Length: 427
Ligand SMILES: O=C(O)C1=C[C@@H](OP(=O)(O)O)[C@@H](O)[C@H](O)C1
Ligand SMILES: C=C(OP(=O)(O)O)C(=O)O
Image (cartoon, rainbow, N blue to C red; front, side, top):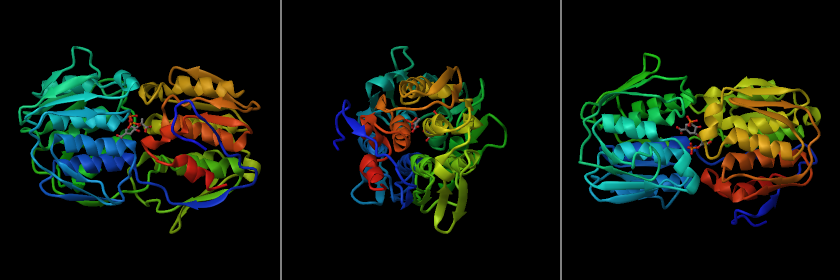
């Protein structure tokens, strides 16, 4: 197996018998990048324990380092020591939405100019609403009127802050970005959403909960409005939960093989949207149990899955793995409410429709989702479009169908380094 060239094809292992496995998964990207960012604007050193070491979190660490913080990524536990942001800096966002959206507001606190750019596709992921909001809040942003990467934030050492109205229907990260920095703005920040419903609301709840852990006062009592009071951000010693969205392919492996997979350390309470998998997998016909061993999923006999009808608006990042299960199900499925995932690492609805159809699936792409009906699948190349979750989806199909070749499986390093080797070890 080789995993480093975008054109390479990885033969996804086929599960010929029910898979029985217990896994410990790497930490949550969303929790780790929030913890790192807040640590960098806190009033003392913080520790991020069991930090996820992946492309997105390393990009966040180097963004914070280039602003002036000291981030020690040497071991499993990362120490972040804040320092004033004074130098000019360049931030590589890669393909990390959390870096492109969360770092510009804190760059406004710098007294230097901070340039942002990223992977080619990152230039088409939405960010304009955040840049306009920052301008309203008193930050100078040069984006050549593009509302997209590349752009520069010209910090003056402080941000006035105040009230801002944004349309966050393209990404919940627009709201999270402003809230995460808000306590350090002179007047705090009061964010109101005006537009179609905000997707991925659990991720905003995650932001609010992590802010409160840092002693920040947040008022989220009204729908579509979040207010962060100005004040200090306390340093925190935090253990990062396993990434429950990245658990999807592993639990799906139990589902498609009729086996049993346990994910250790599944939190009893969490703001991670991946926790919804407990309910979603039952709808496919799986048995699900959460106990001291972790979350255990047992697939139906022979991996014979039922079709599902799901609105995934709140948990859009689960769509690729769920679509893979739908393509393998014995009944029709409808996935809805996820128009916004066209702005993710790739246009995920188009990518899923194209790749599933190429393997024989009966799939119709809708403006906000996918309709799937049972059809015999066959092997072939599964393209991943530099999208870690497309790679997960192809890998799930490959567990159930002979001859699936996943292109550029190394793209999974965005949130799960060594995914392919880890996965192969389960067979
Ligand atoms: O804040 C976060 O950590 C995330 C929010 C969501 O973004 P969208 O609201 O853009 O879907 C999610 O899909 C993404 O994977 C991570
Ligand atoms: C949408 C995703 O990532 P990002 O944080 O880059 O938006 C994702 O991981 O599914």
